[in-house]
Image 1 (cartoon, rainbow, N blue to C red):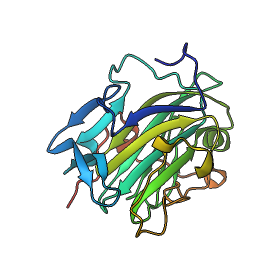
Image 2 (cartoon, rainbow, N blue to C red; image 1 turned 30 degrees about the horizontal axis):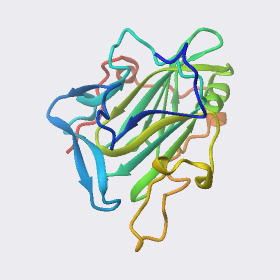
Image 3 (cartoon, rainbow, N blue to C red; image 1 turned 45 degrees about the vertical axis):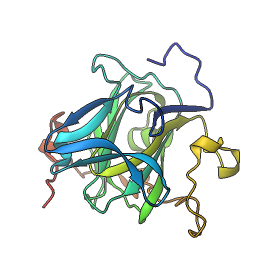
Image 4 (cartoon, rainbow, N blue to C red; image 1 turned 30 degrees about the vertical axis):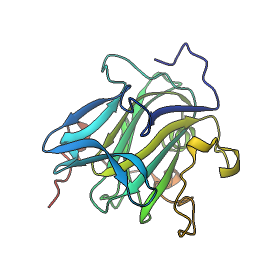
Length: 228
């Protein structure tokens, strides 16, 4: 989609306030919903993604499964609200060995597991709004010893609220971000953003040797935990 396009410093793939926030995405919803709601904390419209089973309620980008994003930027940033329910997202990348690798971060997993084509890792979120910053180039290098080339696909699963999802050529300080990339909270709240929160807690340098992903995780339609 973007491989032959000019990619500026910030490349947005989802913005909840836009007229068509899911224009690039395909919803896959069973026993759940994806809808635009008013968030009481930031007093603005956001996308809410919910589902009884995280494996069957998600949005994927690009919408056409035969296409690839082709985004070169190495940083993936998600502005997401913690709903205190199961939540996971997955990104598929291409490395310089022409191998497709998948990284899946979840708030219900306690250990990092590595296989040749997929790495799953735990993720911690602060209360309320978080900025998840994912250094794709670093994770590819430290997990597989290869170099990041581009992002192919992205899936975001229930349960969360989304403000924006974008890629960046570097991590920008809050002062350098355009106004519509910032998360403005009401005056009575002390922080404008839960900066630093939402990072995957795994250290790729500790991934080696031995830990294996369960077979169920390695299938494209792999089951994930179901909400109690």
